[in-house]
Amino acid sequence: MGDPKLWACVAFLVFYVSYRILKKQQLRRADERFAVSKGCRPVRKWNAKWPLGLDMLVKAFKHGREEKILRWFLDVVADNGVTFEQKLLFARGVNTTEPPNIETILSSQFSDFGLGLRPPTFAPLLGSGIFTQDEAEWKHSRELLRPQFMSNRSQNFDQVKDCVQNLIDCVPEDALVDLQPLFFRLTLDTTTFLLFGRQLSSLKSEGVVSRESDFASAFNLGQDYLALRGRLGDFYWMLGGRQFRKACATCHQFVDRMVQNSLQRPAPVGQEDSKNNYIFLDALVRETRDPKVLRDQLLRLYPSVPINSRAAKVTTTLPRGGGEHGEGPVLVRKGEAVGYCVYAMHRRKDIYGPDALDFRPERWESDELKDVGWGYLPFNGGPRACLGQDFALLEAAYTVTRLIQVFGKIEMVEDEKKSDTSHIGEERQTLTLVVASGEGCRVKMVR
Image (cartoon, rainbow, N blue to C red; front, top):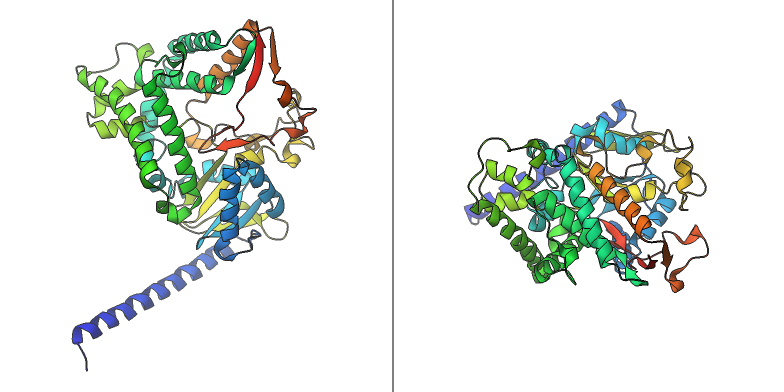
């Protein structure tokens, strides 16, 4: 008869596997009935050649190393259509650049979608903060951050003016300069002011001082790892290691110092002394004096991201992409991800015209884009729209205006001059969670 315990284990295993198979079949039939009731049609499948979509994953990592991944994404959309199904590493998902679909997941059916695997994927660097939170926790964090942008506008603008002047002072007279690191330091100074109530003044030094330089490098490296982990889906945990852990530790130590400085001050009581002097970190200290919680809330990322996604919290639908012509609804099962690439959507010729790939600011001066709606999404949309978009636009507009006022001539480096605008988008691009030029921004500026 054998060992009774062994037979009991075998019986339990058979029962468990049978139960899982039966449960999966029941869910599949329920999804099929739901799809029929909503009029869903089959969605186009992507043109992966290898099992599990491994060839597409290999290409993504290859083009990422070459700093050409966004250009490759445009090719993927051109080959597969504006909405298509991907099956990658055992997981099904839907990718889309259709404005109605993006409006659905970000706004009209907001409650059907969540962040999916983002929290565990990003947790080693970002912890539990507004960028990785959902539902009640996210709402609370957002309400804490909102006054920083709504109440401090005059003070924020004064800081922007000071930081931009520091940037101008860093530009050498009648010589070549790479503006990209200066712009990064400008953003670092204004962001630290928003969060901590004081700027780091990194633009005032010959180079970014050691502590801030270490943080900037570590944060960029950490973002790179997060982007790579995100491409692995359920297998995000396979990417990490000592270098990643060191980068996370450096970022945490940098923020922890700011947190400790705030905690060493007497605990704030009641409301702010002035609505025009709201400091995000001090507002957090009113709620908790747990250093880790404070650090997690402060570790936020710069908007806006060219690629994003949401995961279905319930079985639901997208309005476009199904059927032969892609005009019918598409089924999205609970747990499946919907990826959307704003970078590709902003280059759709059926939205922006045959010259969509050209830099032509004049397109915004007429009525040709008056109905663009969700086809233009630089700061995301819906309830999770970027809180800092007005501040970002103010900072960018003021910086450009001051540079034009101060410098009578701004010229491209001779070997980087292009004959026409057809080369835009062909430059190397560094894509982590945000995008930047892989070639910098080298110009000659003459006062």
